[in-house]
Length: 165
Image 1 (tube, rainbow, N blue to C red):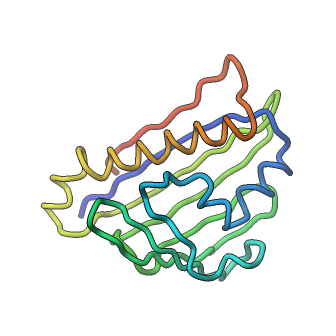
Image 2 (spheres, helix red, strand yellow):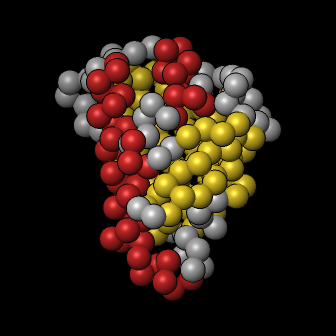
């Protein structure tokens, strides 16, 4: 069983309250997802985030393939972090931790995603050029979109890294 991890850090010149209010609103996920993903929220995003919240999406991760994705918000610490876990969808495992912390001149947003692909060896073979590439594009888009909405902090490098765990 091959597990993968994506770690991303982005720095924005905003308060933790402003970052939290934006990121903890499930409807804003559509704002920071590329249009080509065909991302639509079907249900569950009508309230502020809370533990136990079930959110259903429709997503098109690859051309010609549309699927429903159901996540549960499992943990929330107001202003600091939340965790979403896939209940049904394209991954065998999807555990996504979102952290927000105050830094000099703004906030650091850190995403840590542990995930496992379906299809065994075939999933492992397509990971580098299909799944990893797609996730890289999504997080690059998010970085650009968040920078356009809130600005960036000069002199601090945003990072994204993948590893097998």
